[in-house]
Image (tube, rainbow, N blue to C red; front, side, top):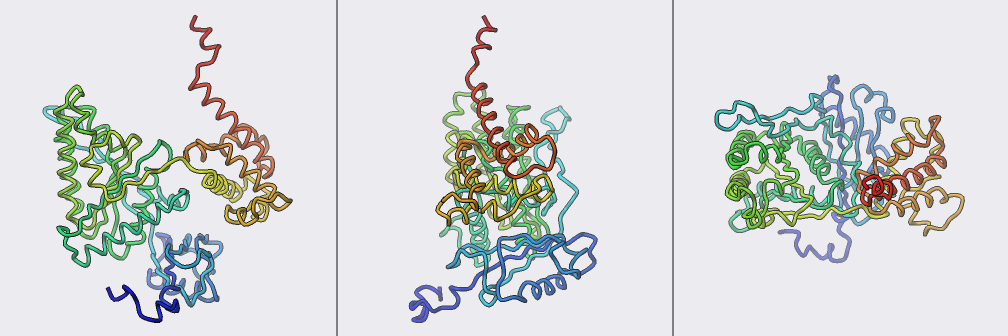
Length: 448
């Protein structure tokens, strides 16, 4: 409350607090390293603050670090929190607050959580997939996701606020929050990936609060398909196991329900199904379990849907965030392709990449899209992004592979050659999709 209104210095715009930037430094430590996390953090703070400014929104590889850190640190990710007065990536060191997070990756892979079969059937049901976090399976996923909105920052602020309200003991009878997120939109737009990446990011950022993290990805279809008349009981069984996990206050538990419409189908539309009673019992069981589990501050429910119009309104009402994730715009597509080209260059599959020849989106916008020798290749990629409108993020990230496999005969490729190949592969992909949607005359002739 003390910051509301502020003092005269703040009103005059001279408050230094507003010019401070919180910068998160995520330090990936090798499991073989025997250096304490405290020692690593201290050395890295000195290293990062030695200059007059710090470049943010970058990842430093082991080769870019001082010799004293090599063999101990695999990479350092540096990112600035949203909310500052400047969007510059270069922050004066006197104006920043470093928040360091030292972590190690779990490499064991996922486990499958099975529920005992219904009735006399002893066969187990693969009800969920479980990861210990942070997991090597999701390393780098957060930074690879590109959206037209600031949904990633919104989700981080949402979780931060939920924890703040819980820590301060805010009365939930007066101000309500459920820790439930619903991401909806067309297939392939990165909804599930964002949920996984968020769970990973939280396990890193909250590493000092929680000893470990878990991601539980519920297999909605298996709960509903095999013993349809008993689905409600299976939902209750699964959430009973989840309750056991969240009882450990040292664990951060993220529950992902992909294609949540399978479990939370509208009860009004379920009345027309083959077993309306069971469908309604499933929704009732899910809502009841969500209401019970939300009292724990260490749990987050993440859900996705491709057909949100079929979800029960009572479930939708419980979601604190209901965010539409649409198909990427031309600007987002450009950034996706740009990141793919950087990756191919990094591994030596494009050999003449020069950042001066392929500008970032922001650099290209500053040029006002005026074509010259410096912007020629960037504008070519911008045009390819325009031609890619309507493709999902999943399809877009497949296009560089298709371009390389179909048109690059002798690796490595030159950048101009690769851009030409990318456009040709894109045109073929769109033609192939059209042929699937609209049967060809040859198919029609063959059927006569």
